[in-house]
Image (cartoon, rainbow, N blue to C red; front, side):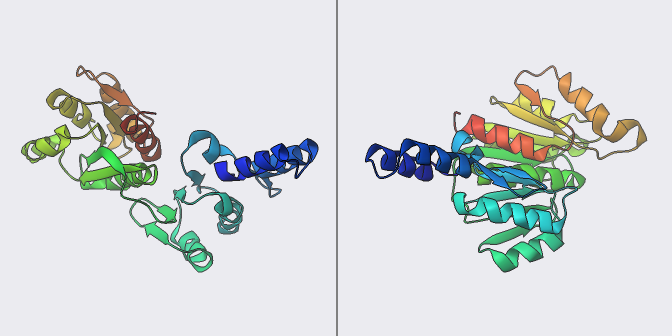
Length: 247
């Protein structure tokens, strides 16, 4: 449900075209999509000002397509995370401007604009790119201009130094790392803006599926580091865009 839908109903009530009771019923009807297996919140984008997001893991392809079908009329852009290629193929047959980001399993529906401000998303290693890409696409969908730098972790820290001028221009940096998780703290110590740290489950046994990287990030001695959950590229990209846009 978009703002225009709400305003249109309120204006009709004001002008006496419909009774208040009927207007109330229409608003309630616009707020939820009843699919039996899902109660789709159609008012979220109107409340938050951000495009709608569908988390696809453990949903069937048909469930996802039905949810998108209910959401699309009131949303110019829809973001889907943790999606399969089979979902993309179905959506691409039914909607325009569908893009599939194979590394991260992200799908976008709708035209994404240029964005404003600047969010930088960096990955420590190539293995961290799937989570980093999820963060980057999310920030773009949420209206931010985004630049990316892959594979600049502390194992070859000279690779980071050549990117510092770009990073220092950013309003916020998303740093994605597994293994020892040291990259966000290093970046925070070399730049002046907020750093959102994303621990990934990349690494050998004692990394405990990203737990060790998360603890390193939480214990960073560099100020300005905030940490999201393990592998939560979407959450990092969303928060980065909010900071970037001053919301």
